[in-house]
Length: 191
Image (cartoon, rainbow, N blue to C red):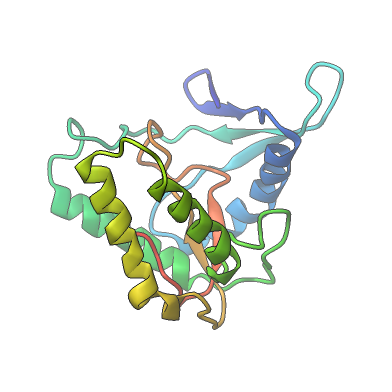
């Protein structure tokens, strides 16, 4: 993403998969905006693939704000409350025909059972690494907790809701385009 003057932002995806996300944003961001208590990126131009840039791209209105961090968040309780309000609002927005689709939909926003065997194998492989320090071994023991009761969370079902997927490190505290997922409401949510 690149600033374009004082009022705009250009999103130039680096991969074809990210270009698909740009197309999805063009459809869904304007539909979500009226349902949320904060401003979200507003698409103002749809760039098409061409000789100068081979993927779909977009221009959005810039939203002023500071990156969330120790220097900018002086009242953590208020920040947390504001963030919770946005997430609750996002989860209450009607799906408006949205479905989980695409190459990553087998695990993004879905049940965890599809990943369980693979993740278990990764944890088991970590146990065989020579030279693990005490803290790493303790972490592996804590991860075993998922085998002692978390398995019941693996296949929650229910009507889907919208969920803001994540706020990558180094990104601003504003909602970023391209990070919206669908998930089942009763499934585990990272805190």
